[in-house]
Length: 456
Image (cartoon, rainbow, N blue to C red; front, top):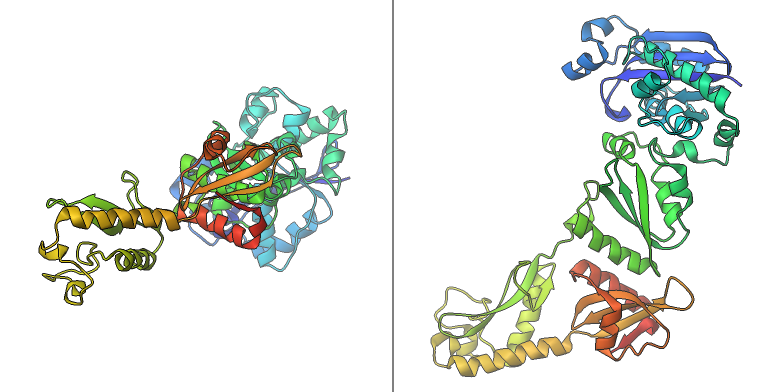
Protein backbone atom coordinates (compact mmCIF):
# COMPACT_ATOMS: atom_id res chain seq x y z
CA UNK A 1 0.00 0.00 0.00
CA UNK A 2 1.39 3.38 -1.02
CA UNK A 3 0.52 6.70 0.58
CA UNK A 4 0.79 10.18 -0.94
CA UNK A 5 1.58 12.61 1.87
CA UNK A 6 0.46 16.02 0.67
CA UNK A 7 0.81 19.60 1.84
CA UNK A 8 -0.08 22.79 0.00
CA UNK A 9 0.17 26.52 0.52
CA UNK A 10 -2.65 28.67 -0.83
CA UNK A 11 -3.77 32.25 -1.33
CA UNK A 12 -6.74 31.77 1.02
CA UNK A 13 -8.90 29.38 2.98
CA UNK A 14 -11.37 27.99 0.42
CA UNK A 15 -10.79 26.21 -2.86
CA UNK A 16 -13.40 27.82 -5.12
CA UNK A 17 -12.01 31.34 -4.74
CA UNK A 18 -8.30 30.81 -4.14
CA UNK A 19 -5.27 29.24 -5.75
CA UNK A 20 -2.39 26.98 -4.78
CA UNK A 21 1.01 28.63 -4.41
CA UNK A 22 3.07 25.56 -3.51
CA UNK A 23 2.55 21.79 -3.41
CA UNK A 24 4.61 18.96 -1.98
CA UNK A 25 3.82 15.26 -2.49
CA UNK A 26 5.83 12.58 -0.71
CA UNK A 27 5.15 8.99 -1.78
CA UNK A 28 5.39 6.81 1.35
CA UNK A 29 5.50 3.00 1.38
CA UNK A 30 4.41 2.63 5.00
CA UNK A 31 7.95 2.81 6.33
CA UNK A 32 9.70 5.65 4.57
CA UNK A 33 9.45 8.18 1.74
CA UNK A 34 10.39 6.67 -1.65
CA UNK A 35 9.55 9.55 -4.03
CA UNK A 36 9.13 13.31 -3.78
CA UNK A 37 7.48 16.04 -5.82
CA UNK A 38 7.78 19.67 -4.79
CA UNK A 39 7.13 22.87 -6.71
CA UNK A 40 5.92 26.44 -6.40
CA UNK A 41 2.75 27.19 -8.37
CA UNK A 42 1.72 30.43 -10.00
CA UNK A 43 -1.81 30.88 -8.58
CA UNK A 44 -2.76 33.44 -11.24
CA UNK A 45 -3.92 35.80 -8.51
CA UNK A 46 -2.31 38.19 -6.06
CA UNK A 47 -0.82 36.80 -2.84
CA UNK A 48 -2.00 39.13 -0.06
CA UNK A 49 0.55 40.51 2.43
CA UNK A 50 -0.73 38.51 5.41
CA UNK A 51 -0.49 35.26 3.40
CA UNK A 52 3.05 36.17 2.36
CA UNK A 53 3.92 36.90 6.00
CA UNK A 54 2.60 33.46 7.02
CA UNK A 55 4.16 31.33 4.27
CA UNK A 56 7.08 33.43 3.10
CA UNK A 57 5.89 32.96 -0.49
CA UNK A 58 5.76 36.25 -2.38
CA UNK A 59 4.30 37.30 -5.70
CA UNK A 60 7.81 37.59 -7.14
CA UNK A 61 8.63 34.00 -6.11
CA UNK A 62 5.72 32.51 -8.07
CA UNK A 63 5.96 34.83 -11.06
CA UNK A 64 7.92 32.32 -13.17
CA UNK A 65 6.57 29.19 -11.47
CA UNK A 66 4.43 26.74 -13.51
CA UNK A 67 0.68 27.14 -13.61
CA UNK A 68 -1.28 24.32 -12.00
CA UNK A 69 -2.46 23.13 -15.41
CA UNK A 70 1.18 22.69 -16.44
CA UNK A 71 1.76 20.09 -13.71
CA UNK A 72 -1.79 18.76 -13.34
CA UNK A 73 -1.15 15.49 -15.17
CA UNK A 74 1.95 14.71 -13.12
CA UNK A 75 0.12 15.49 -9.88
CA UNK A 76 -2.86 13.36 -10.87
CA UNK A 77 -0.67 10.38 -11.77
CA UNK A 78 1.14 10.65 -8.44
CA UNK A 79 -2.12 10.69 -6.49
CA UNK A 80 -4.66 8.57 -8.34
CA UNK A 81 -3.62 5.09 -7.11
CA UNK A 82 -2.45 6.04 -3.62
CA UNK A 83 -3.95 6.87 -0.24
CA UNK A 84 -4.16 10.66 0.02
CA UNK A 85 -2.72 11.71 3.41
CA UNK A 86 -2.62 15.19 4.93
CA UNK A 87 -2.95 16.95 8.26
CA UNK A 88 -6.60 18.07 8.02
CA UNK A 89 -6.96 16.11 4.81
CA UNK A 90 -10.23 17.64 3.59
CA UNK A 91 -8.62 21.08 3.23
CA UNK A 92 -5.75 19.93 0.99
CA UNK A 93 -7.94 17.42 -0.85
CA UNK A 94 -10.61 20.04 -1.64
CA UNK A 95 -8.04 22.39 -3.22
CA UNK A 96 -6.26 19.74 -5.28
CA UNK A 97 -9.48 18.03 -6.41
CA UNK A 98 -10.92 21.43 -7.41
CA UNK A 99 -7.82 22.40 -9.39
CA UNK A 100 -7.61 18.98 -11.07
CA UNK A 101 -11.28 19.19 -12.06
CA UNK A 102 -10.57 22.51 -13.77
CA UNK A 103 -7.98 20.65 -15.82
CA UNK A 104 -10.24 17.71 -16.69
CA UNK A 105 -9.10 15.19 -14.05
CA UNK A 106 -11.34 13.56 -11.45
CA UNK A 107 -9.56 12.62 -8.22
CA UNK A 108 -11.30 9.94 -6.16
CA UNK A 109 -8.52 8.70 -3.86
CA UNK A 110 -9.16 7.28 -0.43
CA UNK A 111 -8.12 9.70 2.30
CA UNK A 112 -6.40 9.61 5.68
CA UNK A 113 -6.40 12.55 8.05
CA UNK A 114 -3.43 12.60 10.41
CA UNK A 115 -5.34 14.94 12.75
CA UNK A 116 -8.12 12.39 13.25
CA UNK A 117 -5.72 9.42 13.36
CA UNK A 118 -3.48 11.15 15.92
CA UNK A 119 -6.42 11.79 18.22
CA UNK A 120 -7.18 8.06 18.19
CA UNK A 121 -3.77 6.40 18.04
CA UNK A 122 -1.85 8.99 20.07
CA UNK A 123 -4.45 10.31 22.56
CA UNK A 124 -3.84 12.73 25.39
CA UNK A 125 -2.15 15.67 23.66
CA UNK A 126 -3.40 19.18 24.40
CA UNK A 127 -3.30 20.22 20.76
CA UNK A 128 -3.30 18.34 17.48
CA UNK A 129 -2.22 21.20 15.27
CA UNK A 130 0.78 20.10 13.23
CA UNK A 131 3.28 22.42 14.89
CA UNK A 132 2.30 21.67 18.49
CA UNK A 133 1.87 17.93 17.91
CA UNK A 134 5.25 17.67 16.24
CA UNK A 135 6.84 19.57 19.13
CA UNK A 136 5.24 17.17 21.62
CA UNK A 137 6.44 14.14 19.63
CA UNK A 138 9.93 15.58 18.94
CA UNK A 139 9.33 15.55 15.19
CA UNK A 140 11.58 18.11 13.50
CA UNK A 141 9.77 20.66 11.35
CA UNK A 142 12.02 22.42 8.90
CA UNK A 143 10.60 25.40 7.04
CA UNK A 144 7.22 25.59 8.87
CA UNK A 145 4.28 26.79 6.76
CA UNK A 146 6.02 25.78 3.58
CA UNK A 147 4.65 22.78 1.70
CA UNK A 148 7.88 20.78 1.71
CA UNK A 149 8.62 21.25 5.40
CA UNK A 150 5.09 20.48 6.56
CA UNK A 151 4.82 17.45 4.25
CA UNK A 152 8.09 16.02 5.61
CA UNK A 153 6.83 16.42 9.19
CA UNK A 154 3.49 14.82 8.25
CA UNK A 155 5.34 11.89 6.64
CA UNK A 156 7.28 11.28 9.86
CA UNK A 157 4.03 11.50 11.82
CA UNK A 158 2.45 8.96 9.45
CA UNK A 159 5.34 6.55 10.04
CA UNK A 160 4.79 6.85 13.80
CA UNK A 161 1.03 6.34 13.45
CA UNK A 162 1.46 3.21 11.33
CA UNK A 163 3.94 1.79 13.85
CA UNK A 164 1.66 2.57 16.82
CA UNK A 165 -1.56 1.36 15.21
CA UNK A 166 -1.99 -1.84 17.21
CA UNK A 167 -5.79 -1.90 16.84
CA UNK A 168 -5.84 -1.62 13.05
CA UNK A 169 -7.51 1.80 13.09
CA UNK A 170 -5.96 2.84 9.79
CA UNK A 171 -7.41 -0.20 8.03
CA UNK A 172 -10.79 0.48 9.63
CA UNK A 173 -10.68 4.06 8.44
CA UNK A 174 -9.86 3.01 4.89
CA UNK A 175 -12.72 0.51 4.82
CA UNK A 176 -15.06 1.58 2.01
CA UNK A 177 -18.01 1.56 4.42
CA UNK A 178 -16.29 3.95 6.83
CA UNK A 179 -17.43 7.55 6.55
CA UNK A 180 -14.89 8.89 9.02
CA UNK A 181 -12.68 10.73 6.53
CA UNK A 182 -15.65 12.81 5.45
CA UNK A 183 -16.05 14.13 9.01
CA UNK A 184 -14.64 17.53 10.01
CA UNK A 185 -11.11 17.19 11.44
CA UNK A 186 -12.07 18.21 14.97
CA UNK A 187 -15.34 16.27 15.36
CA UNK A 188 -14.90 12.90 17.14
CA UNK A 189 -16.51 10.00 15.30
CA UNK A 190 -17.98 8.78 18.60
CA UNK A 191 -20.20 11.86 18.76
CA UNK A 192 -21.66 11.07 15.35
CA UNK A 193 -22.08 7.38 16.16
CA UNK A 194 -24.22 8.16 19.22
CA UNK A 195 -26.77 10.10 17.17
CA UNK A 196 -30.09 8.22 16.88
CA UNK A 197 -32.10 7.68 13.70
CA UNK A 198 -35.12 9.62 15.01
CA UNK A 199 -36.51 13.16 14.62
CA UNK A 200 -34.84 15.90 16.59
CA UNK A 201 -32.70 19.02 16.68
CA UNK A 202 -28.89 19.03 16.59
CA UNK A 203 -26.40 21.66 17.72
CA UNK A 204 -22.92 22.05 16.20
CA UNK A 205 -20.51 23.65 18.68
CA UNK A 206 -17.08 25.22 18.34
CA UNK A 207 -13.96 24.66 20.44
CA UNK A 208 -15.31 26.78 23.28
CA UNK A 209 -18.67 25.03 23.32
CA UNK A 210 -20.54 27.88 21.62
CA UNK A 211 -23.39 26.81 19.35
CA UNK A 212 -22.51 27.76 15.76
CA UNK A 213 -25.35 26.00 13.93
CA UNK A 214 -28.74 24.50 14.78
CA UNK A 215 -30.57 22.10 12.49
CA UNK A 216 -33.67 19.94 12.47
CA UNK A 217 -33.88 16.37 11.25
CA UNK A 218 -36.28 13.58 10.45
CA UNK A 219 -33.34 11.29 11.22
CA UNK A 220 -30.65 12.95 13.34
CA UNK A 221 -27.73 10.75 12.31
CA UNK A 222 -28.47 10.87 8.58
CA UNK A 223 -28.99 14.62 8.58
CA UNK A 224 -25.84 15.42 10.52
CA UNK A 225 -23.74 13.19 8.24
CA UNK A 226 -25.22 14.87 5.17
CA UNK A 227 -23.43 18.10 6.15
CA UNK A 228 -20.09 16.44 5.46
CA UNK A 229 -20.79 15.12 1.95
CA UNK A 230 -20.69 16.92 -1.38
CA UNK A 231 -18.09 18.98 -3.18
CA UNK A 232 -18.85 22.49 -1.93
CA UNK A 233 -15.52 24.33 -1.78
CA UNK A 234 -16.81 27.74 -0.65
CA UNK A 235 -15.15 29.70 2.14
CA UNK A 236 -18.30 29.58 4.25
CA UNK A 237 -18.44 25.78 4.15
CA UNK A 238 -14.71 25.30 4.76
CA UNK A 239 -14.69 27.62 7.77
CA UNK A 240 -17.89 26.03 9.08
CA UNK A 241 -16.43 22.51 8.97
CA UNK A 242 -13.18 23.66 10.56
CA UNK A 243 -15.05 25.09 13.54
CA UNK A 244 -17.15 22.00 14.39
CA UNK A 245 -15.75 20.37 17.53
CA UNK A 246 -18.84 18.66 18.94
CA UNK A 247 -22.48 17.92 18.23
CA UNK A 248 -25.32 17.75 20.77
CA UNK A 249 -28.93 16.86 20.09
CA UNK A 250 -32.44 16.76 21.48
CA UNK A 251 -34.84 14.01 20.43
CA UNK A 252 -38.35 15.07 19.35
CA UNK A 253 -41.45 12.95 19.03
CA UNK A 254 -42.23 14.17 15.50
CA UNK A 255 -40.61 16.03 12.65
CA UNK A 256 -43.04 18.92 13.20
CA UNK A 257 -41.81 19.33 16.78
CA UNK A 258 -38.25 19.35 15.44
CA UNK A 259 -39.20 22.17 13.02
CA UNK A 260 -40.69 24.21 15.86
CA UNK A 261 -37.84 23.58 18.29
CA UNK A 262 -35.29 24.51 15.63
CA UNK A 263 -37.02 27.83 14.91
CA UNK A 264 -37.30 28.64 18.62
CA UNK A 265 -33.69 27.70 19.39
CA UNK A 266 -32.33 29.75 16.51
CA UNK A 267 -34.18 32.78 17.86
CA UNK A 268 -32.86 32.06 21.36
CA UNK A 269 -29.21 31.33 20.55
CA UNK A 270 -28.79 33.21 17.23
CA UNK A 271 -25.96 31.00 15.81
CA UNK A 272 -23.58 32.55 13.30
CA UNK A 273 -24.22 29.96 10.58
CA UNK A 274 -28.03 29.98 10.65
CA UNK A 275 -29.35 32.54 8.25
CA UNK A 276 -32.66 31.48 6.71
CA UNK A 277 -34.81 31.25 9.86
CA UNK A 278 -33.39 34.49 11.25
CA UNK A 279 -35.45 36.25 8.59
CA UNK A 280 -38.77 34.81 9.83
CA UNK A 281 -39.55 37.71 12.16
CA UNK A 282 -43.05 39.01 12.65
CA UNK A 283 -43.57 42.03 10.41
CA UNK A 284 -46.88 43.56 11.52
CA UNK A 285 -49.29 43.41 14.45
CA UNK A 286 -52.83 44.52 15.31
CA UNK A 287 -52.69 46.81 18.35
CA UNK A 288 -55.19 48.60 20.57
CA UNK A 289 -54.56 51.77 22.56
CA UNK A 290 -56.54 54.63 24.05
CA UNK A 291 -56.03 58.09 22.55
CA UNK A 292 -56.06 61.45 24.36
CA UNK A 293 -59.82 61.74 23.95
CA UNK A 294 -60.46 58.35 25.53
CA UNK A 295 -61.28 56.47 22.32
CA UNK A 296 -59.95 52.91 22.02
CA UNK A 297 -58.23 52.70 18.67
CA UNK A 298 -57.33 49.61 16.64
CA UNK A 299 -54.50 49.82 14.14
CA UNK A 300 -51.92 47.87 12.17
CA UNK A 301 -48.31 48.75 12.93
CA UNK A 302 -44.88 47.23 12.58
CA UNK A 303 -44.44 44.38 15.03
CA UNK A 304 -43.02 45.45 18.38
CA UNK A 305 -41.73 42.81 20.75
CA UNK A 306 -42.22 45.04 23.78
CA UNK A 307 -45.96 45.56 23.15
CA UNK A 308 -48.52 42.75 23.14
CA UNK A 309 -50.29 42.48 19.77
CA UNK A 310 -53.88 41.25 19.47
CA UNK A 311 -52.72 39.33 16.40
CA UNK A 312 -49.71 39.34 14.10
CA UNK A 313 -49.23 39.19 10.33
CA UNK A 314 -46.49 38.78 7.77
CA UNK A 315 -48.13 41.17 5.29
CA UNK A 316 -50.00 44.46 5.57
CA UNK A 317 -52.73 43.04 3.34
CA UNK A 318 -53.51 40.25 5.82
CA UNK A 319 -53.65 42.79 8.64
CA UNK A 320 -55.92 45.20 6.81
CA UNK A 321 -58.25 42.41 5.67
CA UNK A 322 -58.78 41.32 9.27
CA UNK A 323 -59.17 44.89 10.50
CA UNK A 324 -61.77 45.66 7.81
CA UNK A 325 -63.69 42.56 8.91
CA UNK A 326 -63.78 43.86 12.50
CA UNK A 327 -64.82 47.33 11.29
CA UNK A 328 -67.69 45.90 9.25
CA UNK A 329 -68.93 43.47 11.91
CA UNK A 330 -68.86 46.00 14.77
CA UNK A 331 -69.55 49.31 13.03
CA UNK A 332 -66.18 50.83 13.88
CA UNK A 333 -64.77 54.05 12.50
CA UNK A 334 -62.30 53.61 9.64
CA UNK A 335 -60.55 56.85 10.55
CA UNK A 336 -60.04 55.81 14.18
CA UNK A 337 -58.71 52.48 12.86
CA UNK A 338 -56.24 54.29 10.56
CA UNK A 339 -57.79 52.86 7.40
CA UNK A 340 -58.57 56.38 6.22
CA UNK A 341 -56.45 59.46 6.70
CA UNK A 342 -56.51 63.15 5.78
CA UNK A 343 -60.30 63.38 6.11
CA UNK A 344 -62.38 65.21 8.66
CA UNK A 345 -64.94 62.40 8.74
CA UNK A 346 -64.61 58.85 7.46
CA UNK A 347 -66.61 57.76 4.42
CA UNK A 348 -68.47 55.31 6.66
CA UNK A 349 -70.08 58.24 8.47
CA UNK A 350 -71.41 59.66 5.20
CA UNK A 351 -72.82 56.24 4.29
CA UNK A 352 -74.30 55.52 7.72
CA UNK A 353 -71.71 52.91 8.71
CA UNK A 354 -70.07 55.07 11.42
CA UNK A 355 -71.84 56.74 14.35
CA UNK A 356 -69.56 59.78 14.21
CA UNK A 357 -66.72 58.95 16.59
CA UNK A 358 -64.36 60.56 14.07
CA UNK A 359 -66.26 63.85 14.53
CA UNK A 360 -66.77 63.52 18.26
CA UNK A 361 -70.49 62.96 17.78
CA UNK A 362 -70.35 59.54 19.46
CA UNK A 363 -68.97 59.41 22.97
CA UNK A 364 -65.79 57.47 23.74
CA UNK A 365 -67.68 55.29 26.24
CA UNK A 366 -70.25 54.26 23.62
CA UNK A 367 -67.66 53.65 20.90
CA UNK A 368 -65.35 51.70 23.22
CA UNK A 369 -68.08 49.16 23.96
CA UNK A 370 -68.07 48.10 20.31
CA UNK A 371 -64.26 48.02 20.21
CA UNK A 372 -64.29 45.66 23.19
CA UNK A 373 -66.87 43.49 21.46
CA UNK A 374 -64.63 43.48 18.36
CA UNK A 375 -61.67 42.31 20.39
CA UNK A 376 -63.78 39.60 22.04
CA UNK A 377 -65.07 38.56 18.62
CA UNK A 378 -61.51 38.36 17.31
CA UNK A 379 -60.54 36.05 20.16
CA UNK A 380 -63.61 33.90 19.54
CA UNK A 381 -62.82 33.30 15.87
CA UNK A 382 -59.18 32.46 16.56
CA UNK A 383 -58.83 28.70 17.00
CA UNK A 384 -57.95 26.88 20.22
CA UNK A 385 -56.94 23.25 19.83
CA UNK A 386 -54.46 20.59 20.81
CA UNK A 387 -52.57 18.48 18.32
CA UNK A 388 -51.79 14.96 19.53
CA UNK A 389 -49.20 12.74 17.84
CA UNK A 390 -46.67 10.05 18.66
CA UNK A 391 -44.14 10.66 21.42
CA UNK A 392 -40.51 9.76 21.93
CA UNK A 393 -41.52 6.44 23.49
CA UNK A 394 -44.53 4.13 23.20
CA UNK A 395 -45.99 5.21 26.55
CA UNK A 396 -46.32 8.91 25.78
CA UNK A 397 -47.90 11.24 23.23
CA UNK A 398 -46.58 14.51 21.90
CA UNK A 399 -48.86 17.50 22.28
CA UNK A 400 -48.92 20.98 20.73
CA UNK A 401 -51.34 23.62 22.03
CA UNK A 402 -52.70 26.53 20.00
CA UNK A 403 -54.70 29.00 22.08
CA UNK A 404 -56.78 31.75 20.46
CA UNK A 405 -54.73 31.63 17.28
CA UNK A 406 -51.34 31.68 19.01
CA UNK A 407 -48.96 28.83 19.60
CA UNK A 408 -48.77 28.27 23.35
CA UNK A 409 -46.23 25.47 23.60
CA UNK A 410 -45.51 21.77 23.25
CA UNK A 411 -44.39 18.77 25.23
CA UNK A 412 -45.23 15.18 26.09
CA UNK A 413 -48.23 13.79 27.93
CA UNK A 414 -49.49 10.40 29.02
CA UNK A 415 -52.20 8.62 27.08
CA UNK A 416 -54.80 9.26 29.80
CA UNK A 417 -54.27 13.04 30.03
CA UNK A 418 -57.52 14.98 29.57
CA UNK A 419 -56.60 17.57 26.94
CA UNK A 420 -59.87 19.42 27.57
CA UNK A 421 -58.54 20.46 30.98
CA UNK A 422 -56.53 23.39 29.65
CA UNK A 423 -54.86 24.29 32.96
CA UNK A 424 -53.70 20.71 33.48
CA UNK A 425 -52.53 20.47 29.88
CA UNK A 426 -50.53 23.69 30.12
CA UNK A 427 -48.73 22.46 33.22
CA UNK A 428 -47.31 19.57 31.17
CA UNK A 429 -46.19 21.71 28.22
CA UNK A 430 -43.16 23.92 27.65
CA UNK A 431 -44.28 27.42 26.61
CA UNK A 432 -42.73 28.87 23.43
CA UNK A 433 -42.95 32.23 21.70
CA UNK A 434 -45.51 32.20 18.90
CA UNK A 435 -44.92 33.60 15.44
CA UNK A 436 -46.42 33.27 11.97
CA UNK A 437 -43.74 30.84 10.79
CA UNK A 438 -44.55 28.35 13.55
CA UNK A 439 -48.31 28.82 13.18
CA UNK A 440 -47.99 28.25 9.44
CA UNK A 441 -46.18 24.96 10.09
CA UNK A 442 -48.86 23.83 12.53
CA UNK A 443 -51.84 24.84 10.40
CA UNK A 444 -50.37 23.12 7.33
CA UNK A 445 -49.91 19.97 9.38
CA UNK A 446 -53.49 20.19 10.66
CA UNK A 447 -54.75 20.40 7.09
CA UNK A 448 -52.80 17.27 6.18
CA UNK A 449 -53.74 15.33 9.32
CA UNK A 450 -57.08 16.70 10.63
CA UNK A 451 -57.61 13.59 12.76
CA UNK A 452 -54.73 14.69 15.04
CA UNK A 453 -56.51 17.94 15.94
CA UNK A 454 -58.63 18.07 19.10
CA UNK A 455 -60.75 21.21 19.50
CA UNK A 456 -60.79 22.75 22.96
